Image (cartoon, rainbow, N blue to C red; front, top):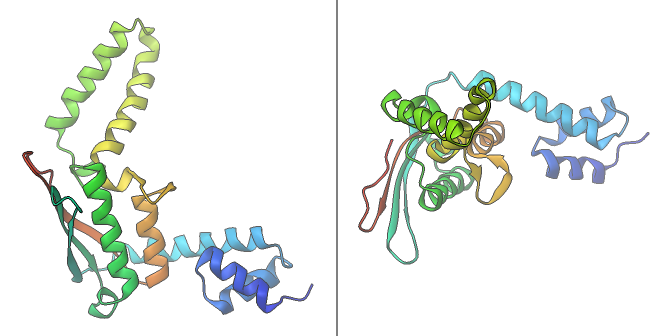
Length: 202
């Protein structure tokens, strides 16, 4: 079938891929929009995976202050070049991540950053809770695993559902930005300040 300019435009809106890539994908899959979109997403994620190891020595510090001036966030987010750091897309990403931190109050960037001194007591609490609820002993590890997954989602920024689109996590949001902007992007650290509370930080 013939590939129209409208089909290419629609696929670009779905995937964010370039016009030539969209046209090729549509031709490859005989105009099947779903298959073409899946192919482009997989290709984009593969490209993003290759970029993840690259040095991120540029970026910016974003400052978010909640409208009531009772919650504030300082965020360092890095990319590879000053050029990308100055783009509206990168700055919007930084702002939206800072907004996420202000609203959902994670304490760490990623799961691996959470010290064992924090994880172990939580594991003990969840094991004791499962036993108190009378769960079968052979099911306790599985139950604790599920509850710890929720704990990690609360604690680790990258594992949280994105507040502006709960179909994706913050890790997904970063992956999309890496594909879109063509550079490795990493959240380096953050500090959240709430009036009268201790601030969570990475």
